[in-house]
Length: 114
Image 1 (cartoon, helix red, strand yellow):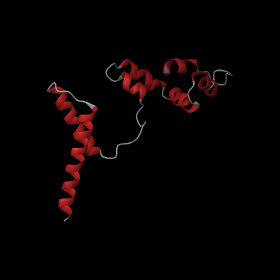
Image 2 (cartoon, one colour):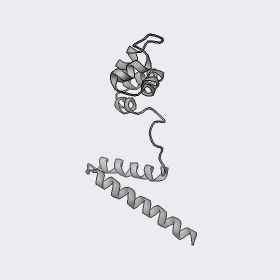
Image 3 (tube, rainbow, N blue to C red):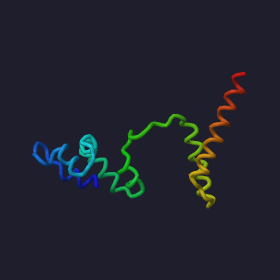
Image 4 (tube, rainbow, N blue to C red):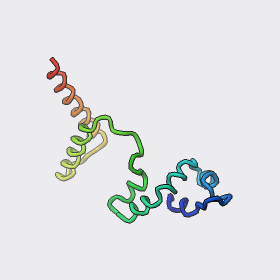
């Protein structure tokens, strides 16, 4: 979808500018502007099939930044470990494990403070 929109863009051509394309495809003009600006990165990501679909949806720097990097790294390794063992990883399990990791980290901090 993003590639089609970026191919339609033509600089200084009425009906093919950011605003017109945004209106036509029902997205914001800033989204179209970013897609055109990052067109090379989108094309490179589409060639790499392992990363392709995820990067095409999210460019680097997009989205909310992680507040607890250590927690996310530990949670990621837990998920990978469960996947390698062939065990099910449900959203509910991920939330519970994240909460468990968070509590263990903050209990460790509380005991070291006193």
